[in-house]
Image 1: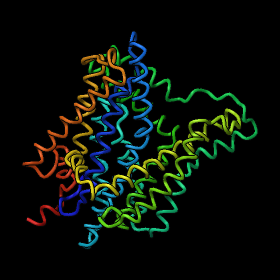
Image 2: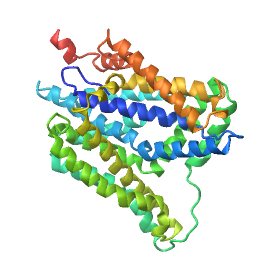
Image 3: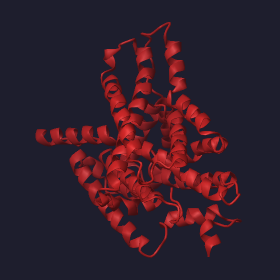
Image 4: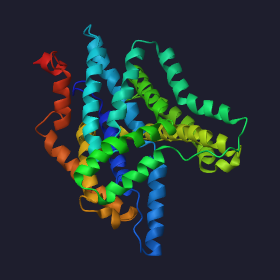
Length: 391
């Protein structure tokens, strides 16, 4: 998730840090996937909690991880290109890098079963066969994936009997079981449950919600963004056009996603259609966030406050899982019992601030975060990194 200092773009670091903060805030109000509403809260506080919950999910739900996926593909392009100009093929080393990321992701999954690192590690292999394809072919493949082909197959299968009652999504049973050990389990029980029950549930949920197709598509779009150099300064015209198109796409998609009764084609058809429209809605609003951030960054330099977190995104992501679950789950402080969205948001803001200050302190004397450094060194076992090549 990081690149060498010589090849990184300031806006990428800041945008990645922005995504880390928004993920932190969402994870806190969710109690790190332990959905629980404290009893006995006054009506006014419940109203504020609902406003915060709806507002944060409108802004970041399904979008923050999409920004991360886009930047993952962008980072791949930078690393691939840096090696290509030296006459080297980065793809074998990238495959090994993904194996290492899977290891980090599985460790992170012990604490937080919603971990995205392990999913990115597996789906990241999709970049290897497309790395040398033309822009046109990569874009075509990305569009096909964004169209959610499996969900359309489900729509077609449902046409003969559109009102058929569908069973609950398979992931629900796994998440229901997880709530038991989140509340009452020891740390060891939580870790084991997350690696077995929880991981299966998250993979099923990702499939049910179309993310298995969406994530590699975003990787490819990020790679194309790198090829086109759209994140470099001076591309305001591109980002203004992107913003306009994204807003025009988002408005009708959001309406259809929020009020599916508008089409009311039958329960068996509506479910996959909601998956499709929600996916498109999230991608379009992600484009709104990325284009707005990119337009503002070079004129509003205060956005650089996110950069330290972006430079240590892997460390930041893992640490927030360890600290957050220790705060909310039963084996730790058990704060899930007492915190609605308002108090959880306050905790998230404090944690994000502390994490940024730690990043500033660490980067004052290190080029990368601690986990990033380990990842980089293990990536180049038996080879020469560009950093070492310059020394």
